[in-house]
Length: 305
Image (tube, rainbow, N blue to C red):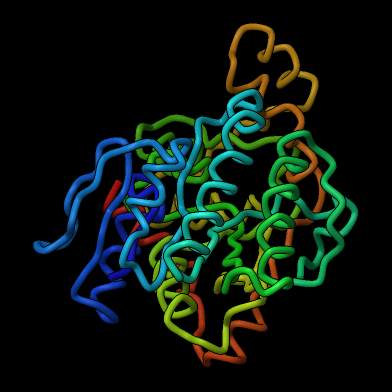
């Protein structure tokens, strides 16, 4: 039995598909879980409830923590530490290994080019400090021998049929609708994105590789290029002009007075005003797996959108 805690998130569906290669018993846990594979076991519930998390991980050999909380600092501060404590405690009690699907928010803002597994943890944002807290909570427990765990870390997402990806929402959907592609701060800095099918495949592999535990792994991610190049790639795939609109920092601040999402985005703009290059060479070398080329990924995303 392998269990996905937060199966309704951006990675959950693809991960459930990939886990079929390793087990015929998959439990999907979410507030409202939906079957992906015919034989999936569904368990609705709340990961902030410690008794429920113990039930969710019972009889599981591997648990994947992939939950995506609402993008609000207050929610993150209240719920993430509780969820991580509950999951660690439940996995310890049930003898279950833990794979935490993480992002790059904890890294030092001055060291995003390139980002390696060893990049300094020095989060510049309040959300980043929450992510650093829970990642360190997990790795300290693993280093102390209390649990077998690993961190699978991704860059920004892009992928078919996901609704919480800035790339999909601000670029792909806008261009396909005849609108301008939107981006923050500049189109001239490099950026790269982790393709969600690649992330799922790699996360499943890590969870079922004994050698992977006790470490942080960057999931396979194609090389960075300027956002202007990314937008031109999407425009070419959709057969439309590469029209763009850049939202400057001051405008995000003004929009934040009226728009809660923009208010939450304001502290994250450091990711867009400099080169952002996520390096996955460790995973690629150890497992001999390359990320999907950007051109192929963009084609698949535009066809699915």
